[in-house]
Length: 360
Image 1: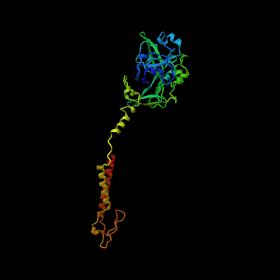
Image 2: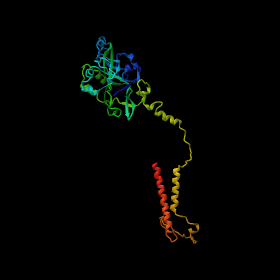
Image 3: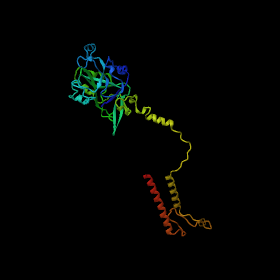
Image 4: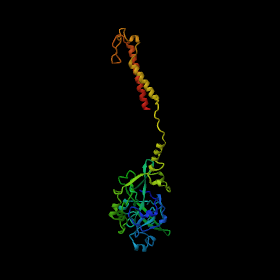
């Protein structure tokens, strides 16, 4: 769907449609449009249509003198977003006509049957907003042309006389989102990417819906005119809020992510060249336990008088195994068994501490 779009340019620039090589002869009701970054439904916006296309008889927009000059000329006209059909007796604000689904146009019937053949228009914009749903959060994104030119969205329009006043309204045609933008939403507007597409869409000479038009409302696929999309401030969701930051990536804002990291780099204090490292309590306990185990593995120390015989030969020899000794001067079996049990207890305690620390 398309629920918001931006058109915050000078009126002269809007009418010129820079980069599109389109000649707009005039802009009717120009003074009723206020350029904005945040255009919402039920507000006024300009649309492009053929001068001689459908409208109420006797209206200023379709006067006989104007049609005689150039009935196929392109004009711009300010209309209200949210189509009110010509058969309406009053403006029903509960009617959901902000968008018109392309499937309904192709299949025929419904409220669009008498409008789609003769009342087609294009809506210029800098880009449109769509909200990405993440759980309970909705994050606004802005989609625009990469080359910066105005987007032209396909639309329908109609007019009705209510209380003696002609009300002109329009709707934006939507279709399935292409693969490139399906992550954002399952719908997107139908875009008219070049002059040829615009002319074919606005050609209402047959006053009917044609198979060629059905092809035009398929998901966007013009690789020559790529689009880009990025996150924008959440404030755009509030009707009436206005800011140039609404159409800029949120990371480029002065209070955005890039500015935050840049400020951190400027204000962060330099690291000291040398700094003593104090081991943590956990590390000190681990080192103490390791030292105790090393001493235990070495066995009991002998007095210096018993370490060697008078001739300098050792009284005791130890094998590579910590559990065996080789001569008759070894400790009694009970003492050796006690040492082995004590060593195992140390190891069990050490392993238990390690597991507990990893768990915490």
